[in-house]
Image (cartoon, rainbow over all chains, first blue to last red; front, top):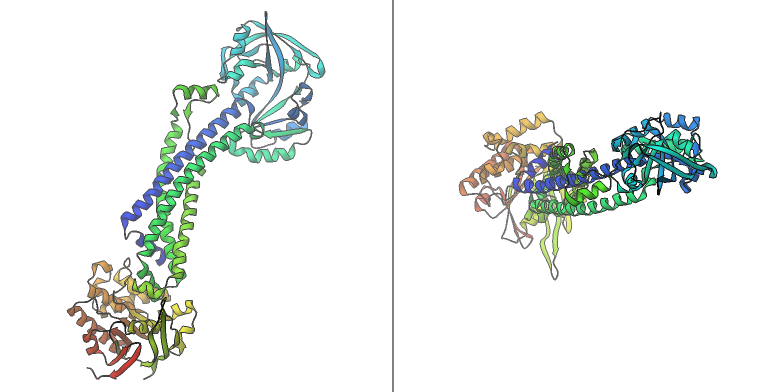
Length: 405
Length: 231
């Protein structure tokens, strides 16, 4: 205990030096936590948008469908698969889909489109499809109405109440054709989706493609991305050939690569920050040891074991890191929390670009615990590394020259 | 009286890049319990080196330092530190108190290293600081004490571990005349009160005037070893 008291008091022999060194750590931690919070917040938003917009956190389909997305590789939801999904505790919702290509025509205009058969209620729980209905009404299991994406509707020159003809190939080469009233117009934030999507009820799509009870995929949702690994691991074990389950990361590797690339950039900047902090702490520790050489010699001379002396010096280094880190985290929590509750709006071209990508134009922040404790761990690691110097010094100090210093 | 310290053939050779310097040259000498000895000699005569080897601070090139039957330079580094703590008290020229500890804590510190109970430490600290005449400054940090007061704390600290003997290297060099007289009187009293052996390295005539034994060193060798009757 006395060693800790001595270490603590030693820090305040030159208060300004301790304050400046701890201050540099404080600002480093604050800046790093702020950057990390913004980075994580952005990733969480992108993932959230991607996942909740269309793909879900996981999808179940046949292995053949993963290789070749034709309607012939669809499946019927078995009782076993249904029970595996319903018994998975981490899942919050799931919904079934039947997707395939078809030609969509109105009067003289025809265009290729993607037909998505969905359970209206289930799909709305998973992707919030209803909120993109700009005109007309949402899907209803009781009628045959379809939802047409806005740019496709404009191209086909149809509106709510008009009819479109869908014409294509169904299950095992059967001709798929039908005429459907337009129940509503969808306006997605993504121009790609607006050009080609048509939604109808699952039953209607199964009838159109002559694929009764057949599905292309089941979309699974968990509460958030942090719950995904355990659910995925468990489902991968339970769901057997010929069915398979894939996470959004596996379904969209390009998005994972984009996030990893961005993370690497952030890590580089934070590394520079921490290198500066490291030299700041190292400079202080070098000074503290060299100017107290005689004092350290006296302590050993009167009977303090070198190991104990190194403990004091270790605690001094640790305290400097602790003061700066604690203050940095204590201040960064309310700041990032405020931004978490009040995301910063983005304007101009950047906002438009984000909207086009289906992302709301805001700078989002994260308040996940690792935003903060990761900084503490880094500083702890740095101080541990630096403390090696005074520890070595205390074991190698030449007593007579130290006493003459 | 018993020999507290027996020194045989003590030699220290410093190897600089070109020449070898024999700082201490084969000294044989014994010190008895309760002696009040001044080791004197001109600057560079080897008295500080002699004291450092005697105190287990500087390893001799040759020779033995036997304290209480223990050949100190045959001890491991760890055991040597413990041996110093339990058997030798040090008073340095520049006081060398631990600046972040109060006068009381400085005295108590060594007893804490020895693992003595808290109550015993507190009582002895108070006794010692009162004995050296600064009982009222127990809570003062060294920076708030004069040079003379700091050296008194250093003496109290040296006595705290109940050592066999105290080594004092130029203890009066940084003190004014009044403080020097006071300190010498104090050390003389402590010597009589606790029967602790004191060995000084000094060129201060006032210290020599108090010493009952004066060992004169020159060129690393003992030139004279004289005993005096003092009050």
